[in-house]
Each structure stands twice: as structure tokens, then as C-alpha cells.
Length: 205
Image (cartoon, rainbow, N blue to C red):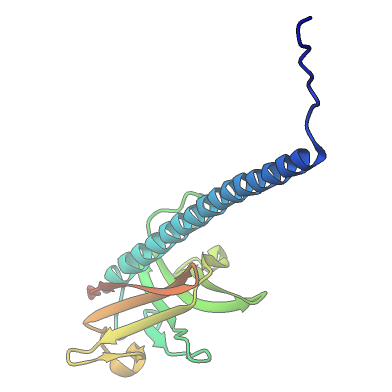
């Protein structure tokens, strides 16, 4: 008589071991998945921050390069104020510069007064930009956030011998020879500084 094979199935201990191993594997897979998602989000946020930073520095560089100044016209003022904010640089920059045509179709003269300054809101720091047309006051544009998540904004002016943190053409009577703009941000908790230097051209209107 042939022997009959008997299948007793899995024991409770084997099932428990399999469940534990499956839980460990599932946790590892989920951890890896969410780790990749977080890394992707950080990389995306970093690229957006760098793009915003590059756009801001290039805009200020072009505006400083195209500054309009006439010592006999008080409207054409170039001003840098050093507003140290609890150890962080918080400069205010005001200048008159040539602006490209606007897309809104508003009345404009092509010469605008621009102000950059940092503001604190909801425990975050923003670099704001406000633009006012020199001749059409009704075309004022409210200050808007030019750059978010900024730690420091420093403007330094070169007078021919040294860099200074303040400048006023009503006092100095001339434009600085060079202007250095430094912005500090944080990436993954580490402070990073980026700078650009622009040389103003003396223009009168």
C-alpha cells in the first residue's frame, strides 16, 4: 500500500516570523520611498530658491548699472542705509534707474525710483521691491516680495579706497564707483552667501 504524504501546513511560529519579516521589508520600502520624495522636494525647493536669487541679483545689477543721477535734481537720489537687524545685514537701497517698458500698458516715463528693503512677516524674512515712476505718480506699484526666505541683504559702496555700508548722494554728491550686493540664504540649514558687483554709469535727465 503506497504511503500517503501528509501536509501539516505552516505552524503559528512560522506565520509570525513571516509577518515580522514582511513588516520589516514594508517599512524599509516605505522609508526609502518617502526619503526619495523628500529629497526630490528639497532639490526642487533649492532650484527654485537659486532661480529666484539669480533673478534678483541680476535685476539689481542692471538697475545699478543704469542708475540715473544729477546732483542738481533731488529726485535723482542714490541712497543706501545700513539697518542691522539683530546681527544680520538689512540694507535699504533706493535709486533712480531706467526701466524697460511695462506690459500692463500703464502711463510711464521710462525712469523709475526703486526701493529694496527687508521685512519680517509671520517669522519669515522677505526682500521687497517697490517701484515709482518718476513723472507719473499715479502709476505707483505697491511693494511686493521680490525674494522669499532670505537671511540677509547687504549693499556696500566702493568710494575708491574702501567699501562702506552707507551712501547718500545728497551728502556725497557723487555716485559710488562700484556697488556690491550680497544676499544670504539657507539651504538645508546651512547659510550660503552670493554677491554681485555693478558699476554705476553717471546719467542725467
